[in-house]
Each structure stands twice: as structure tokens, then as C-alpha cells.
Image (cartoon, rainbow, N blue to C red; front, side):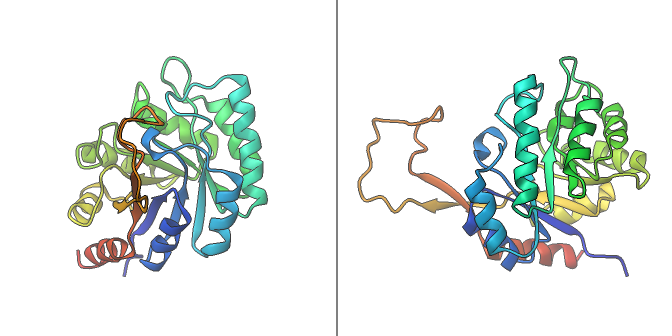
Length: 249
């Protein structure tokens, strides 16, 4: 009998991390600012989430939003954030670096992998922005990273399902491929079947009503207007339903 599919839940709050664990998630990927694809969470967030959950804790190491080509100072920030994650009890980190031509920066990624040891390392969706995703996957395997997170170079995992399948075959067990991108209870089983992945990465965030009784619609604090009173949170039942859908496939 095959092992159950690992479910990694992307979270940006303590409440979501707890819900992911209670719903049967295998581990969480902790980040902040999901509107920009996730950046490194605060020290306080990492520490409190670690205290509240016992499942795997992967910490995003990304100093800013935007592209994945980093300056020397940004790289140093990543190094220091990895050391913080290690100190606070993370099980792994999630990072990725590309050069200006869209290739994997093998040397600097390898440095981060070595610094993170013995924590496991996931090379994130920077690979989906690479110039040649199959070659990039081969390069990632040379860095010593343990996992590769990808939607197959497309917006969603469903759209990139054929490429993800090719990546799994090309990996030959040297690195684990995690499928991601819009995966939910309705398509997870099909994506797993068509790609051969044994791990998936999901968001599952649901809108949460703001407790604010007073709202000022004239002002936006961020670059996305109208989001001051909008939040999203992982719901335990959604994780349960996802795991059930996978078990029944």
C-alpha cells in the first residue's frame, strides 16, 4: 500500500497553521504578504507558530516580492533569515535564486542549502519563472535541495500538469517534486494521478470577515485598493475535505 500524499499548506497566520494541522496537513509553509507570492515572515510569527503546531514547519526565505534575482545585500538578508529560522525550530526553509537570464543561480542556492543544513530545503516557484524549466530542475538537483515546488511553469498546476509529470520523471527520485497552483479538493486527485507526485502544496484560504465596526473606504494602505478589511484564513474542514478526496482516489 502506497504512502498517503503529503499535503503542505501555505499559511500566513497562527490561526491558519493550527487549522492546517487539525485538518490533517503534513506540514505548513509559513510566509507573510501572500499578495506578492509570500515573503519571509517575522521572527515573532515563526516563534509562535512553532509553539502552536507539531507538524512540519517550512519557513519562506524571500526578502521581497518581485523577481528572484537578488543583490549582495538581499542575499545576506536571506542568509541571516535562514539562521533565524534554524534557531526558532523550523524544520525546513523555502528559497530560490535566479540570475538575470532566468537560470538557476546554482552557486548561491547551494550556499543557502549548506547554511540551512540539517534543515531540508525547498526550491520554490522561482523555477516557474526560469527560461528552461527542465534544465532548471536539473540545476536545482545539483544544489542539494530536497524538494522542488512547481506549477509546471503555468499559472496553475492543472494547466502545467504535463510539465510537472515530465519533471517527476526527470528527477528520478533525486529530488521530490511538489505540485502547486490552484490545487483543491476537486482537482487534487487528478493532478496526483496524472503527474505521479507524492506531495502537493495548497493555499485553501477562505475570506474572513473583519471585526471592524468602523470602515473608511476612502483610504487604501497598500497597492491593492479595497483590501484593508479583507483577510483570508485556512479552514480546518477544507483541509479535511482535501485529504478525504485524495484518500478516496
